[in-house]
Image (cartoon, rainbow, N blue to C red; front, top):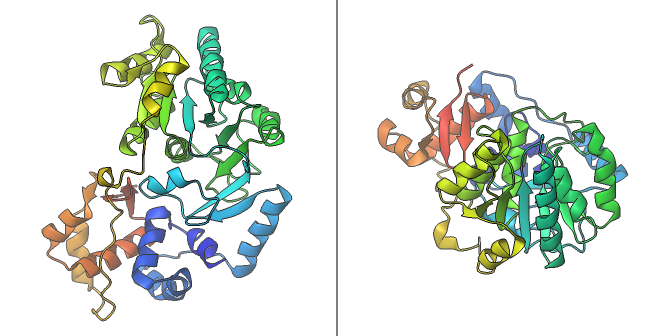
Length: 359
């Protein structure tokens, strides 16, 4: 319950949640410390009440959904290897799925007939070979991937809350996925209407749940390419189906191939590569920033805060670099970043890089 209340606090995302726990030792202690932290920011920050958290849990049960915390047995293990992994996810279904043999399939919403056919062929064969197909329940390629794997297992990652499935036309498909033994998953609370900026957050979970990502069709600027980039950051394999240079829907996939994504023409091309995939290789992952605690150190001053803010701009920078530039202690940097984060003045990239927000 304390985890839920802390995570639903204004401006507390996965990275900030992790830092609050590192700083104060538990969600309960972090909640107790929030009033003083918020007072220092000078901006109002809403912390949900115990009753509101209880209402959310009760509301989820009406949808057959449940909250799963990082570290619990049914938390998807592959998600735990991504930067800023969600501390809590909401899940329904999926008890009999393979969560370790997973492939993400993404692509254009306005997919061509050939793209839909290719998606069905790849997805159904992957399912028959024991892989669970992950996608984002969007129109076009996502829809085709889910429908092709209803009987073999599919996971749909939502950009909004369980009661705000988008698009509306895929609400029946969401029910079909659950009825067939598949899973729905989101990190957003009930009542959350998906916005444009929520889809990249959703995409990072699609790639994080997958050993590799397959891009069937994608324009030059598309959410599918964001998913591919996030997959690379998460040490996942990226595959792309080649397309006609005359079709704008193939520009993104063809560009990925030029940049080193594996060209595929059938499911076997994917399976051969994923046979040795292991995202848990710790040597390839940097831990999220976790400074040593210094509880006896005095709180940073306004001058300290000004020095830190002067070191920040719109370009993401490593926390270690901020320590070097500002001359402040690691503990002071941690506390000031928490204050700036709660005030909505900074944002985190990949869980370890921080940048200044400009309105």
